[in-house]
Length: 173
Length: 115
Image (cartoon, rainbow over the protein chains, first blue to last red):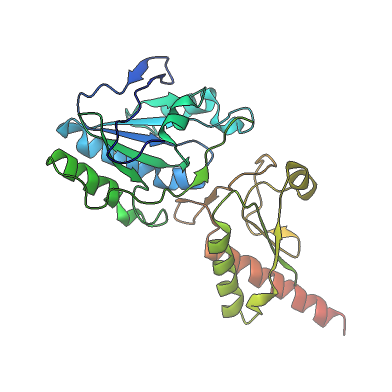
């Protein structure tokens, strides 16, 4: 289990084109467990991508990871992931496949979405929901943005942990 | 009028959907406590019910947002709000329209029975 204040598990996962992405400590990283079939993940999706766009100039990287069992949930298949990337839904954010679900287990991810902010030293500084209401776009991923602002300023976020909200991760049976 | 809410406990959206549904019933002058809430527990139940995700609201057997080819199974259902946003619950305006249409149909049937 990964807790705030602990070292984030390292990983190396392929994106939808087969390119590998790792947690490399080059700068703060947002690790977002997400998927295709969950309405909560979809409702928050554009806000996460907006965070990636807005914080890229400050060397923040966002990695989206789909860990769901695609056999039981075909809408989370690699091909379906590719289709969303092709359609431009990820705006350059790598969409990674956690086929073995080992990364999701290492992070103790609960839901899609479940968001972790990892600082450049590899320490988890925030974990939880992007903001307080999936149904209100004006929230604009405020909790995630506040956590990033704190980390970029060298501080700990005031709100370091919130309950993740969304669909349960679909573990292999 | 038979108002049903079917849910799967693995998805957290049904309390909000039930609250929205009860509010619509109340504002339409119907009994908000008349909702029949049923849990879909297994894939077999989902197949038998034609359940495409949680929550599913049916008025007199008709889905308030009829599914367009979604597969049957235990999952969270993806709805589209009228402004295009994705949502775990149906747009209350769609629920309202479905309730009013069913009430109108029931009223017409009732009137017809005395014709």
